Image (cartoon, rainbow, N blue to C red):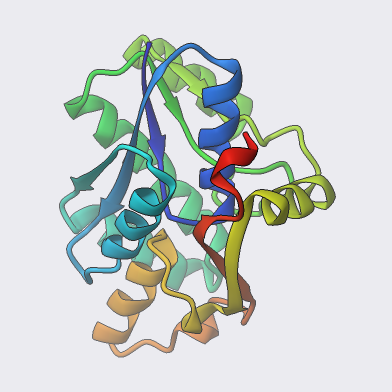
Length: 202
């Protein structure tokens, strides 16, 4: 089964790959999304290469990002705008690329992006695809030590980590508009996978 994983280079999307490869008979290709605001996608490519994951770049028109930032500015916080962006990205991707399965690393404890069951079913019905979020039922207390047992992980304040997620391009677009990102994003820690701890362990 042709499977696309939306990949940021972080521990959640990296772990999603490992789980799918172990339990699911599929051909996985990792896609990192860029809106053309910056070139942070290259960090996900570096991680994918280090983990021996197939990688492709998926470029989307910046209009979707503009709408997400409009929503964030209106709300005064980022969560719903990021969730809106994630839904739009999935649909834009499936409009262009035919796969049997689309997967991501969203977790049970994530505030955003967060798809509701109705969103998942609508996407599946509209595009005749299966949506998988293998980490959705797993506590962060399980995921974190599991990832640290598998990967060498760089951790630190969010703007110090070279990450290929929505947040980096959202913040750069905000700066272009003269907005201060931390009016909308609380300061928090981020992480990025650098390589396997032991490639022969699994």
